[in-house]
Image 1 (cartoon, rainbow, N blue to C red):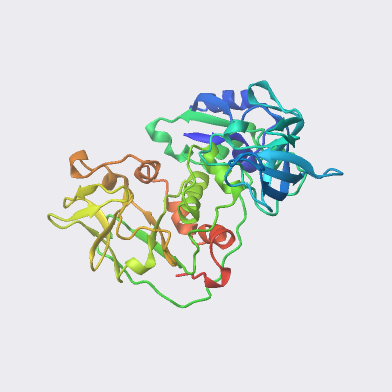
Image 2 (tube, helix red, strand yellow):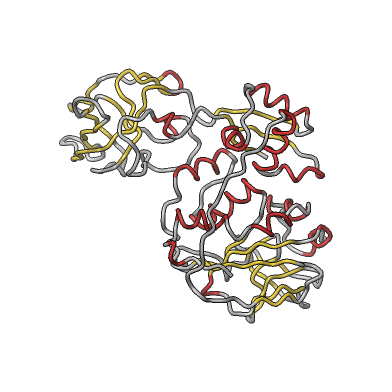
Length: 394
């Protein structure tokens, strides 16, 4: 597992260096495999705003801009990125900046036009994010702020190896708990306000296989904008743990998985016919998974299903037919308590993907979270991709 040192220190922050912290983690039995910087070594990059953006008179693929970086005048900067435009908040390397590989920024001319800096992409700053063009920052980013400080880039990504009996440490909460014990410090668990229900919709659940899933919870979030941008702070925390940002719904469920160790799944509410059933598969049933592969199910495979058939393989993989897409407006969030024996199925029973979700489900560490989960995902949904008045508690 890979995790952000800063994220762990939000929970518990001992007065030890990164090296000492890694030694402690290793001595706890959570062997540290590697430590790496989350960004390249650079200085002199600040938050700026493109105030003017015009076509370069002598180059089709270049733009001539004026950029506000908080100084006493605007900077003239020539940029070749296709997403450069007026009003964009950017990461601007000013004169004297030093970028990774000792690349120094100086005043120059590009095709006859003066350029006093550079508008940076993630890759130019040694940040492992696949994107086209220059960095696009939120509109509330303060002009002139040091970019390293803005994204808290003085952080380390720590990778650890866990033995099968320590899945309780496959989360920030679990790691912080261990660090707190060895340093005799209390853990600062984050506080989340309860999101009140404002609509009365209900989802019927039939626990047909209650012995295999003694607790199964659903909650609806309506009026979601899946096309909304996930906040950059959340994207960064996911990235530093090795998770790529997908969309707000997936990102929120992954964030909760990484922070609390609680696997979740999201369904498109419009594609689910009530009641939702938790049952074992019938003979010859199949499920097209989210990745497009088809799983041939056997009778010992626990399913989440509706009247049309399987929706997901419980605790393992979601189905394509009920998956969240860019057109989704209402989602159903799921959390379940699944026993260890259930998920130790034969590998020829399915297209078996041993995801982090599966490992955490297998290790029976969910009950505490499932008892409390009806607060947190909606706290993040409220701030990311949904109008708060459209939240519902079941």
